[in-house]
Amino acid sequence: MSTSSLVHYTTVTRDVDAPIGQVWGLVAGFGAEKAWYPGAKSVSLEGFGIGSVRTFNYVYPAGKNKGQEYTFSEELTEYDASKHSMTFQVRRPDYPNMIAFGTTVLDSLGPNKTRFRWIAEGSPLPDEFVAVLREDLNERFDGLIIAIANQLV
Image (cartoon, rainbow, N blue to C red; front, side, top):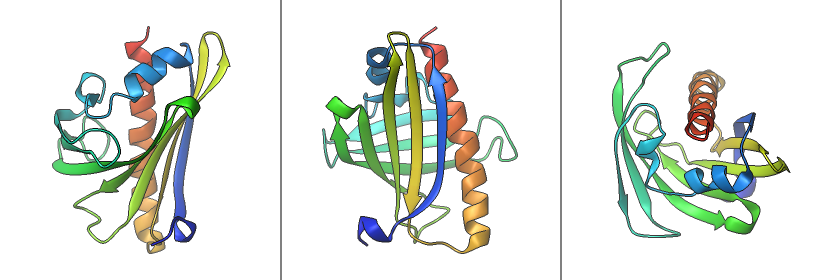
């Protein structure tokens, strides 16, 4: 599937009161998310750089799925430190036929403020699946950005 055939699932944007270098220092540690990722029981990494795969053993820490556990993995597909962005292909067992990508992008808004965007795109899905996925991702991405910001206070 070419990237032009991907559909936009959601984008969550938040401003973080920290310099872009500090935010990037946490986000760019592909495979080291357990320190700030709520619900990550464990994170393992195979490989290094593009093509490396991180695997999460995850339990929903809050919300309607609180306590539910599952394992998912993400393969690093793009990484651009100069643009403070990275993209990873997501493999979720609850959507086994979905081709999906997550992208994190940081933009400096000043010496102590960073705009954080977490973008999800993927293969077309039936509307009812997109609605459930969007709700899950919006809650998760927002919580993750807040968790990162809290690490920098």
